[in-house]
Image (cartoon, rainbow, N blue to C red):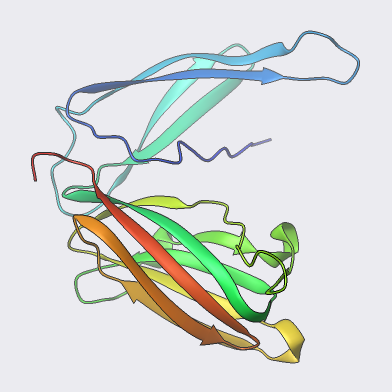
Length: 199
């Protein structure tokens, strides 16, 4: 079988070697000690990675005890970190939110999209609560020359709607937008942080 783990939730500045320590354990009911599953060290040499503008997903593998662990990563040039907060301001929301990255001509790369909220697993949201929508991932790393694209699908209250909203990255600062999709009104806030001090 395969177990998919997502993280770290923040981008890492890669100017030299980065060492990733893997320490996965199995916890069994009625057993006091966790059993080792995968343990070891993976090193990524930032000095020899491609400096191409195209984002290429690479991988490193760790063979250990009971498993093979594969770590996938991509190098992003001229990178900024995007921290995301989405609130339901009015109405209700049942559906999903997808975030992706579009290229310079605003074509969305469907291979680089992530479902950050799904009501099937995260629950239906109504505006009479705090309104904050639980996100599976609230931080992404993006190239300054690309665009962050959000797609909302809302089927609450028997209304089926889909809307898209995009944000252009900045070195610092924040952007806020409001958008109505079906039975809900949403507030988006994205905060930009420069990752590479040499830019």
